Image (cartoon, rainbow, N blue to C red; front, side):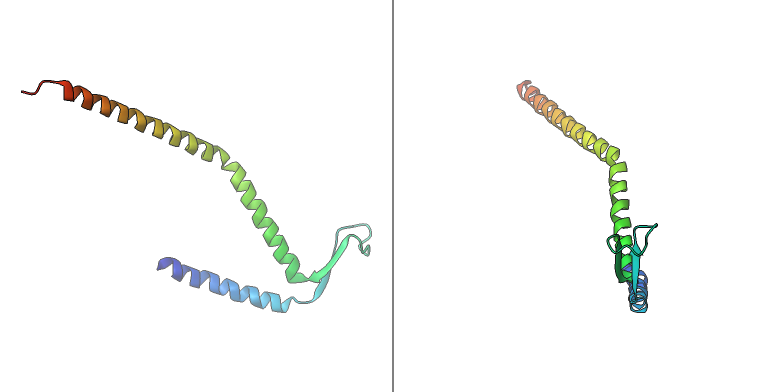
Length: 110
């Protein structure tokens, strides 16, 4: 329930701001990749401003996610190793339990 309220309080205003921004920035702009000849049509692109901003936002999100994923690799590796070790300890505990039950079954009862 709290998550829904937070989503409404945060995402709804952000969505409204984004829609207003897109409507206000529909004018076509030219993005030139050649700083020495900006009029070069081969290395330039024309689109509404909000398209360039959305593309920059998406690229930033993908790069940020990739960097986070790579930097957390050592933690994932450690978690996998500890999970394997936990399985090994459980198997050893089960073997000892089985062995103890076998020994208890052989003891004479009073």
